[in-house]
Amino acid sequence: MKDYKKYTYIPASPEEVYLALTKDISIKLWTGAEVEFEEQPGTEFSFWDGDIVGKNLEFEPNKKIVQQWYFGETEEPSIVTIKLHEDKKGTSLEFKQTNIPEADYKDFTEGIEEYFIGGLVDFFDE
Image (cartoon, rainbow, N blue to C red; front, side, top):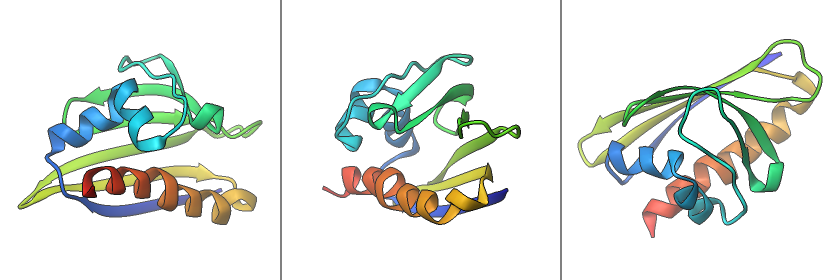
């Protein structure tokens, strides 16, 4: 199992980025796909028509989101922590994920950078 961490600058306020990550209508806009999401600890979610599924664990408005992402039959939970830090001209986003199966690591992290983080950055760049 491997961990992954990425820092990204987003040209929007932490409040705007948080809303984009926690409101189903906003998530649909930047992913371009069906989503099921409720900003409530203990609820399950689905992005990209079920390509990413998991459970919401913790919300700290405009600062932090903690989720468990499911990877088939793995015993260790894969925890995603997204932290939003105010920056001079926007937001510094910290994306950290634990326990990614080694066999999936390369494809999965490339997908996160291109579609999840990349989609979010593109949403605010336009």
